[in-house]
Length: 235
Length: 235
Image (cartoon, rainbow over all chains, first blue to last red; front, side):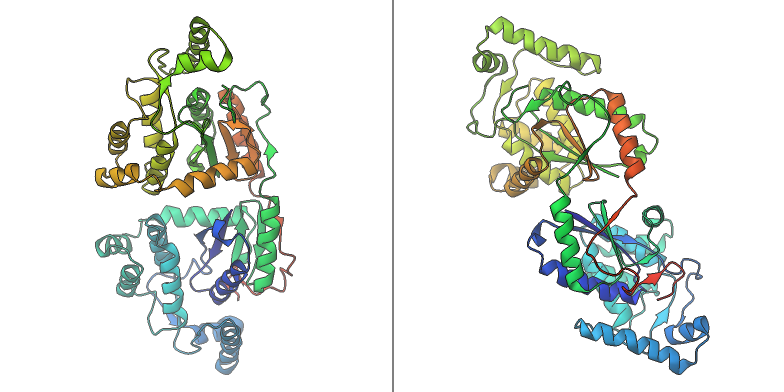
């Protein structure tokens, strides 16, 4: 069974939701038969490239709150993160455009390193004093994820590299009716939104697993008349 | 949208059905948004490894026919192949165990060369005087498909390499109710059996495309209450 997860590296509920999903997955009997694909979603695609601002300032301005109120919002998120055993820094984080991170995640996907890079990028953004909006930091993260440095540098430097793949993921999210992230799609048939509790993910996986082998016929052709070779080798 | 195709290299209707599917796909408006995965299915998993026999002899014995009648069966298949613009040799082909070919197709899948190897293997089996049951020929086919020779040799020589991947594909086919091949599954939601006419495949793709964005909710959690960041960047 395949699970596709739309998320943004700048989305705290995606960071926390990933941990909750993984906990839910660990409790699922058929966890070894699950293939996971991460897909791109930008919360703020219109932020200018290369410009960053402290998250707390951005929150205060966006919601018309004082800095202390914005800090309290971050503290609330942090307490949720801590409940999942995740670190979360409430000060010193920047907001910015995540397009380049998503482009690099697509290279990592092609090289079988997507989950590694995603975890490193979340950690850089939410835990460490490293900016995912800085090109050189992105290169380091790519290399730490096991990618080839030359290849990573070329992708980071070329703003068109994997740009279409990011846009395609975002179009699909819109087509699937995703109004926010994290957004989980199981076998392109079942959907579940938000950073749900782990047990909700386990239940979602169990329901989708039950339904996964029920196929609807399409094409309108005559299956009995269509030439085939059967399980006994008769053609 | 993802299309998974279960087939066996020894199955003439898979060879012909692949061409028909590709013709149907070429007439489908969203053909560039289709990802194709080939999956393993053995028509005769119990044939001993390394033992081959002429196809015409095998057919005559299996169905209690004369050699001339068996040749007529092959000629019927050949005429279907020719209608699709495919070559098909009716004499000199062998039947045998295809497990090693399937294992190598899984290596090719990991290296992004699966379709190339599948086409070469079909061509070797149905057109050229090359035996896919011969290890050295398999190595050559892998190299022609763009794989690394050392890696191909290691996989061909080690009967456990990708064996589990082949078995997993076959278990899935059984779970999905596939009684024969070729068997096509669209987004794990829709199914279509047999070497159908190209226009049936086009229609199947169109139907599945229409339905692809309709997701069923799973997990039973409260989506409104689940924390998320929305499309306006509000978390």
